[in-house]
Image 1: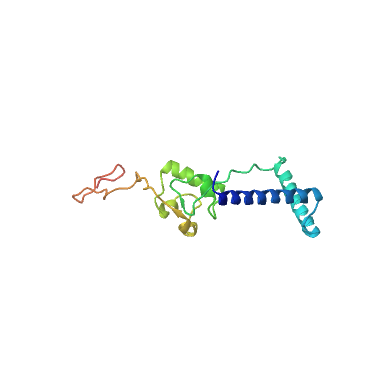
Image 2: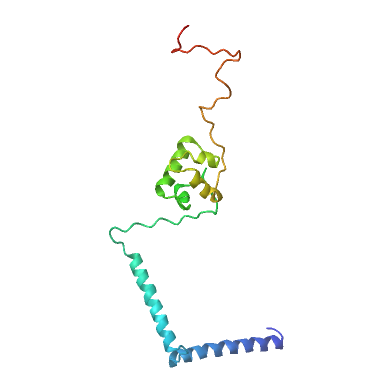
Length: 168
């Protein structure tokens, strides 16, 4: 089975285990407790408090709102891809503004910058400045169809007459 030293070590550990178990049994049967009565009363109060909170948390009363699932939010939120729930976790932004931000982004494309983010109704320079350190933009904004690359006048400097112009 092993050397005589190994057998003695196994016998010693076996005896310690049996002794420890028998002491536990003796304490449980004998009712011996090392707990102070004041400490035991405090523990009972804590258990009652936890149980009462659990009971009230499980009741589904009328008029109570259902809890939203917890949203895990990074320290800096990318407004070009974040959900309304994630945007709502930002300070100064409520559910209505978060929905407007997502709706604007979905209809007009990603913001791309803090200046473009201000196109959302309810977001001005002050709010944008407050959110500057907690938001980022990862996508390029969609090019506007109203942007022009040059002047509308022809290259020769003359302007073409328009429909409402008078002839002189």
